[in-house]
Image (tube, rainbow, N blue to C red; front, top):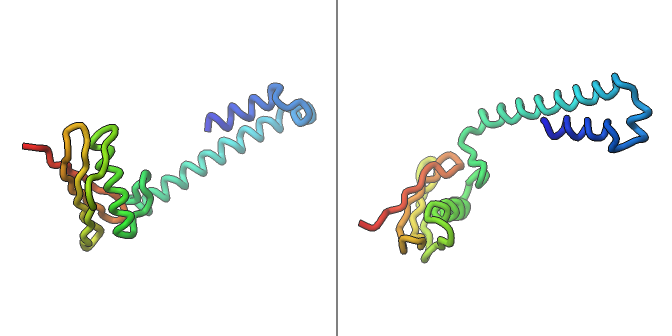
Length: 133
């Protein structure tokens, strides 16, 4: 919202000379008010969407296939294992009633570490890396 207002104020203060000089002070206030109202409406719509789909993962999108579950869990495992981590071997996804359980192995600064990842209702709901004992 602030970016919109700053942009409008910057344009009004000299960024564009022709339209600004042709408008009076009330037109600028209307434009700022419209930008604020638009941002408020967009924020409220985002909140409504989040309530309708609470399990959608923002980083990975809606996970609807086993391949998408494997990809999302692989990305999460690499993130958890640290910089430069890589997936070792194949990743297996087993179907569950509300999603998938994904198993694999990731190599990172601690060596090769097996992981188990849970995908529920279209999102990564948890991941566990098995530390060497």
